[in-house]
Image (cartoon, rainbow, N blue to C red):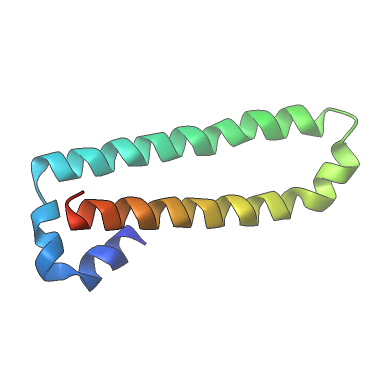
Length: 85
């Protein structure tokens, strides 16, 4: 998604390819991976609780909502970085 935004606005987004811009993208990628890994701790906890049956049926919904949220966050951060704000 980030690459698509950068390619779509290439002349203006060329300014993003600085050391500071790449550092910000790296930090955001690390934070995204931390949040992704935190989901495993919650998943493990819920699987061994009384909510296991309900969790098995609704787990995919949480995945879809989380993916949509990640896409929205990526979109807004990319647009903010591309516009220089």
